[in-house]
Image 1 (cartoon, rainbow, N blue to C red):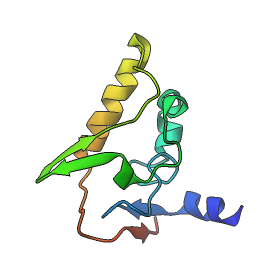
Image 2: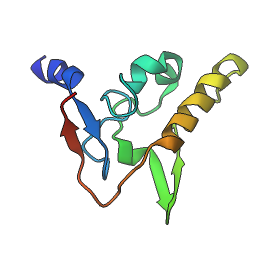
Image 3: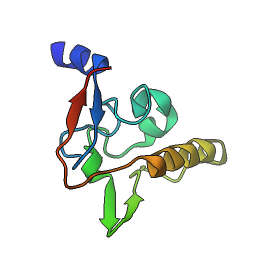
Image 4: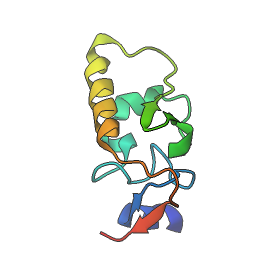
Length: 103
């Protein structure tokens, strides 16, 4: 539909994360996490999750939980590590609203 097309043209700057879909919106890198990590997406328990549902924060420290239906196999482990490292490099401003950013 129109919303899906629109969302492919814009990026999100994540603040609270409650309005940005973790796997399906462009917010971490140049494309969706679903397209960057298809094998992990297939294992995702929460395919419609928002960003804020995928992490917990303890002060300055953020813990990401990919919520996979099973443990990654050896050949999937590298993708999981790359995704977690990518997420660790993201700055989450948990007190700011999410923003749409035109490329």
